[in-house]
Image (cartoon, rainbow, N blue to C red; front, top):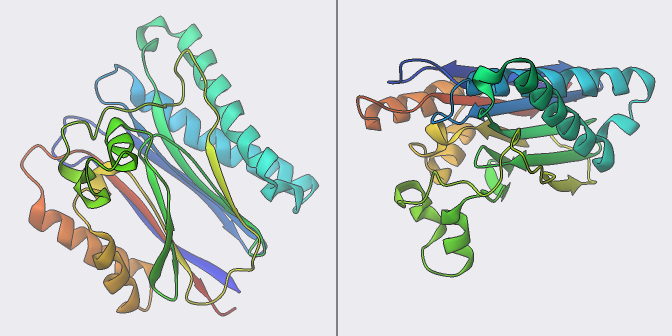
Length: 250
């Protein structure tokens, strides 16, 4: 069993890129992280970079000691809590970025247990045999509207409140991430997409399924998805970032 990944992190039509991704993939486990610094807050690229790098660092340190412990939900939550603390420390050292914050989405797995954690509207999609099995719920006013039955889930992409978030990392009030745990082993044909809103706004879930099914590698699937995005974006589109990970036979 092995996990193959491909990733992109691009500026889009913005003046600078506040997205960041980091990952570590080994024979006995992986940690995939994508962060999206809030564009309206100065210095959020520092928050996103600090968050992603620290989560991978924290996971790696725990895994060196105990591989099974590294994917326990309480430890996965602790990586994100620790990243929040690191972002807050960075803001205290540099008052110019005191308003910076970020979203985060993370997949941590030892291939037997998988934990999906997130804060904000950066998403994780989990596919089984190229069919969407699970996706994270955004922490946004638009997601609340979905839960209340006011709009369908698909319409979050165009809803006026899509970018109004109810939970972020690095803010004054820390709210722990949502964690979803899968205790079944990953199998060939399983796949993950971890991506920012600048990506999923332009690539629909059924298209993700189609591109995964028609691709032999994550590079091929990601290229197809990015081509869809580029056909639809406007001149000043958001930064966009994604990791595509496929489970293959060892």
